[in-house]
Length: 109
Length: 243
Image (cartoon, rainbow over the protein chains, first blue to last red):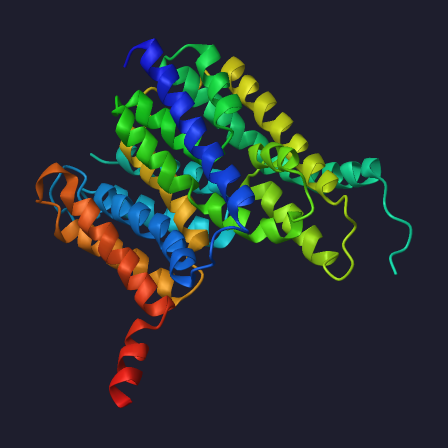
């Protein structure tokens, strides 16, 4: 992407983020509180991100690989889920998950 | 009757003090973002510009990795939308406490809406729910300014000292691990467990579909599964048959 293109993407990301924040604060009273909408909003990130996590973890090269010996992502992801669950820290989850992947790759012969 | 109203300044300071402990987790996160920005090879000002324009840690962290990986603009924008959709829930939960505020204040406070400031502010709003001072938004502002400053400063520190990030950061998996950090805390009940399992399981089963259609289908299935449990769709259906 060109430098101008990158700036446009960043401004686009900022507009989307600010739009979500401002719209919910400013329009909250005018919107009917549909329970299905609140429920939908809650499950979009859970379902979409889980789909991507599963693909990246179980199909590292585009095909299913369930062997922990050749697919190091399986153990690394399991460890990351454990850390995320216990600490709820984004930073620790990333650091432990990535460190696990690197160590498993390094001890591979 | 309310006791003497707290002054704007005292609430601002209370918001700052209440948010200071969170800097210990926000600052390393910002430094990691700055360091990844440096490693991505995009101009330094652009990485800091992202912290100013977007001001949303998780979306920025994923965004910078997608940029490094050469992702298309549409992918970046859609990812930002999905990751930051949770802010709508924050806004809906904050809005009843901000009924008396001018639109100008709401526009300003919206910029400072983050996971951390939401958590700190909503607990204060709930604490004072019985007899809320009308100027509690100064508390929110104090929290937002604290978080904003630490995010900007830590991004710059990461940009200055971040040349230690290994070149082979393992990009696509780093994005997946970041997603794990976002999803796991959101799994708070059976409905969310189901949404995650159906979304993840279907994505793997449908991996052969072209144009990433598998992800779309899996996501839709996961959302519907979560909503079905959450809103008790099937119990309703059974109930209707009984009548």
